[in-house]
Length: 254
Image (cartoon, one colour):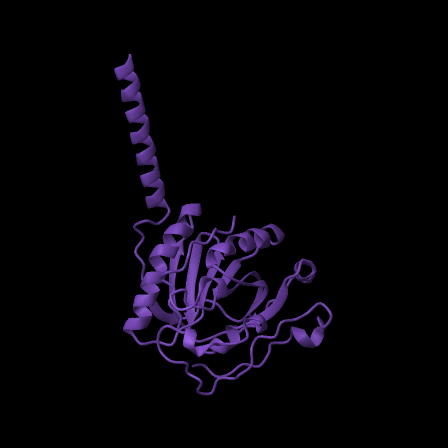
């Protein structure tokens, strides 16, 4: 009887191990990561966001909050600092949702509702090219796997090609996670709460000031949310951060 019990336990453990393995495979464990410099898959974005400072592993609560408030929206995170160079408590990031893209009109009711919940609104520019890759978003495990596999691949690509690519952006779109780092107009991705680009915190390449504007995306407060602020802000002409050590983020729920 005891031997049957042991055999049963062993069989159960084997079944669990096989299930976990296949779940990991389905979640992208062996997904081929192809990083390249490509035309940006997105145009200008109007976003609602919350700014935070601290370990990137704390971003999960903001993702949960934004998906509850905007369940049909595309979540995104923008990570400004290199965890290898910046203390965990000083890392800057935003988490939010896309209100509109390109010339689309945003959902004003949703926008107001998010602002009432403490979110700010900004516009991120369209750029011609980005360092880019995508990863399947199948299960919660997908994001764990992506964090540990994708950022190291992005870092290797940026360093090998001596690129000036920052900040790093994650965009959750249905069954895919898009990982992007703009190659131009980088300053325009810094919301006012960040205090702007800190050159010493970039990990590869050099800041290409060129013809870039010194402006930052304007954060729109509830009080000045009028028609004049709904226009696209001016941005500079087309022109790094290394994330292989990004800590784990909890995924947004679908």
